[in-house]
Length: 277
Length: 301
Image (cartoon, rainbow over all chains, first blue to last red; front, side, top):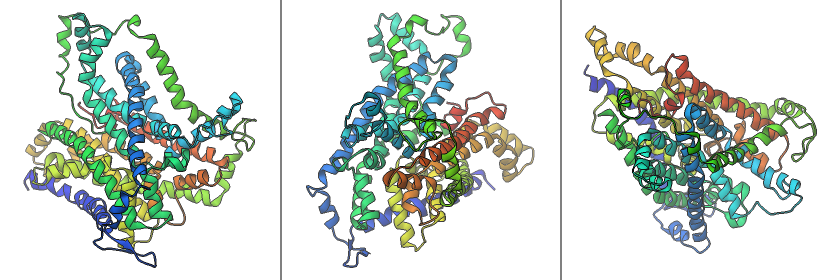
């Protein structure tokens, strides 16, 4: 048997699985988004555009914009926190590098709900911070709480790619920058940052994509004014049982994010090709 | 997880010998290390660990209070293990994670081998399709999986959760195993064939043993991710038993009881043990490489 046919056979089970359980459901969602619910609340497939017209309803537009806004804010904050952390570990970590990066990753294997809940206990109206300071500051049910929750939830996705990019960078490049009389800031701007741009981009996308669709942070840390698109989708599918509208929301989210996903995947696939070539 | 970021376009490190001539690459001197950065790291780690430390601490609180610690006790763990429905949820979560781990690891490893070794017309589109679940928001995945299961009249149960979990775990395994496969020298396989082994024997006796560290590490990663997953489970779960994260959600939404700290701490231990094993495994195989690199799919990078 030639190698190509032998190896191709290995592709079959995984490819079939992906088609049946990943592609097919998305096709169903797309089809249902043109449907409606009848008087009995049953979802009916159709070819109507009502659900998409509802998306531009003044009641929903702010929610969609807010989701993108919160996610962008989370990306920026993750970048501001994550870059220095990755930089410190990659450049000054020495033999503690692996330990430090493991410590960064560790909290992200604590259940996301538990981590979010911990912030409720800390910042709630009668939470620990208010208790210790003897104040009654309202932290929760604000946009800051939700954005903070997203940052705490997805920060590792920012740090790891930047760390990887910094780690791969030849340290003598920084030395060279200094030898050429570049100040620390100039060296960073003209040498370090351009060399790690791919990491920054990858990290930003890896935070942005899950943050846009998140509903946990907004549900637990936000109030009615902080509803995100993820909450809307979840309500349509679980509480109010309007699946066709939920499907339209899902399609809209996915379509918007697909541009970013493909951008990200193109570079990842190119990398894979280069590696196998 | 950032399993798939891009390779550098930066020039490769100079070979080790090159250092001998030029100035040796000495680590930056102490005064190169900005103080504020050190301080920043301290604050960062506090921010990262204080909330989690509090959950662990209060899981041992002897009083019902979630605010002040009044003494050490294990009563919340007792409540956790003595409540039948919670115990069922724990068992359900473990079952889901185990089955997901086994099936996703097998499918993902096969997919990685096919993607690296086969040259077919669909290879490049499969490469993208295989990565897509990694960047798809979970809510999209959860909603569409729920729709599929109701369309094909599959009752929501542990099975539907497992099906959804496997779909999103295959990609992780493929990325991790593929990186090791790419780093593997092809000559060894060719030598085995020259010595008269069949393709299958070569795969089983030469390729697979070399892949083991990555395969096992990927499996443990999948176990931890599946065990912790909330969104997919939330959309595809049946009435009972529900996996632990779904129970935690209900607890947080409808009145927190101190048991939640014990559940959270217990889940933390299980996740950390499986990830710790995944990080250490490559070393147990006598490889002098970082388990982290294996897990990030960056072997040989």
